[in-house]
Image 1 (spheres, rainbow, N blue to C red):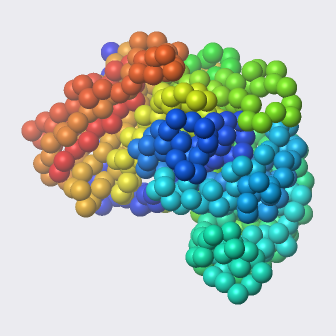
Image 2: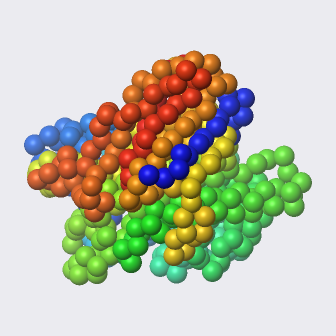
Image 3: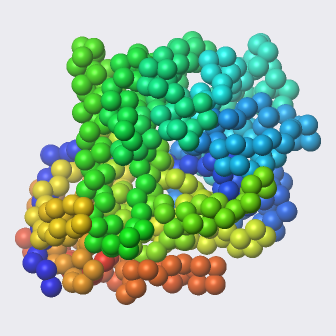
Length: 502
């Protein structure tokens, strides 16, 4: 057994308030995310609009507050007009980002309707690859202007009298990526983003805009890209985007579990870059982060190379997630919470079938992947004030990182509920980890529950045939001692949620 790890938190030492949108997700016209995922007109559970009710229930269970759409790489070649108006009149297009056929059975208005049924808000992305200022102006007029103009009246003719009133917009996607249709230099993109954002805010001054950051921390353009883009688009941008995926192709689990250490560093670099530009401009405005693509992604890479092009909704990027993947997702959620003062939006990419917590079979059931559970727990119990964590833990060195703490943990104080929730991962693959959490500043309390996600096989997965192979239980052993501390023993390779009523 490892030496006891300790975490001390104080109610007066707060990282920041959690913006609920940190538990957002993402739906792109990619693989079976839309067709066979959220939409399948002939499915036994489909409603009158073709939305799968079994998927909707799982999305509602996650309480996702915002969903990014329609991409992703897809958006850089997308004509939004293809997805509005009568479905019978919509064109089929060659979709170049993923080399499929896009039938446009599901478009912008359907997405807005789906969001309302799912209890979420839309985050719309603008095509700044093949298109630009004019189409962005037209789309926001169609979307948000009440009436009396060409595009707003066109929306009304499509059956939507009231504006969609979409408040959050992404100015393109991963525009520094050479894989991106219409990729650009930082100067080209920064100028275009600024002029596009200017026009959009003239139509609707109440919106918030997300400028594209680098596609990943490994890009040669990072972080100079962020500096240049913000320098050019600081006045219109409210957020800078940040994207990162992790994988374990070398089957090095200790290093895989340490990846969130790099995520912490990545977040801090982007914050520092944004603050540098703020200082340079002597501005009172602070740019926050939208981590609008994050997840584990690597399982499906070989499978996708074998797909035939130009089919409708082929099974692309369908990672089947393991227990160790769930632990990494838990660590990534903790990383987001650690900087809740600056990370105000985040989107788990994606929501259904495509590197997703929810999987389906066309015409068949939907089930929860292993990563569903840490995301669910954080969404349900991770809303409130993030407390500054002082952590002492045994450490290890991985192939990529040094001094990796076995304990990864954070605490969130929900003042209205008078609850503190501790999220904790034991990274050790071999030993349990005794934990003590000092909550003395809160007075006395009792443990409501100690949820544990564990499995003897870190490679265990959930499937259609065995959807509950990896699932959490409430059998954790956390308790509150006489001196007001929480004590627990965290099982090896486990995700833990300890809820305390004050």
